Length: 289
Image (cartoon, rainbow, N blue to C red; front, side, top):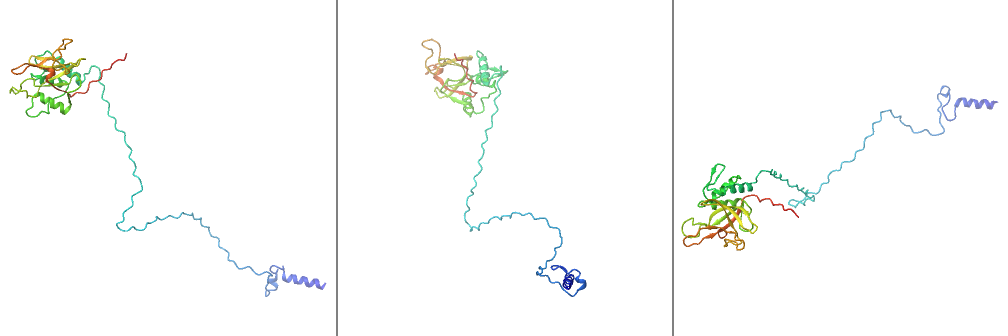
């Protein structure tokens, strides 16, 4: 019984074996409780603060690498970049020439129509304008009807025929071979003694227009002589023959009359050159059989 009372008194004075004494602070203020395990290291209580927003990580900016300074006067390396190739532009298309409506004559057709209308006339007058009474007047009148002038390139001392020849050289084509086209110009030389010295040194002295070309190569020429505007024939394949032996037709007319010391001369003998200042004629379509 005494033992039981003693144990109960001890428990009342000490409390829990591991905790603080129950009521011991009141009964035994001078006693300190010493736990069986060592006390934990003291820790400060953190204050409650607003947690900052997490910072966004940024990639480090790479600094440009600096090459060591090249010595003065050192040659720079050529750039490895290739030049941008130029893109070739398609050439601009030229506007098509307006189609000629039916009933509208070309320049060549107009020249021919005017020259043919003057055959048999003693004077050359076109659209009320009179032209010189010689071979050049006929050619100039025919081309003027198509709006073409044959003047402007002559030199001092040139006669009218030579002036037209120079114009054809400058603005067209002068030729001596091949078949001419109707409307082309034809030049002759030494058709008369222009300087009256009795010698054949006068150069170009006559001009006309090609009217048509026959199958045998005979060219019909419209020109003006003393009696007026006429048609002559010329065949350069047989320049010294007046009539064809088989057909009996004239292929070369007499262009220079005989004079003292000189015999007559045919058109083929006095031919000098052809010339054109007109567009080439349109090809003739041939129907296939």
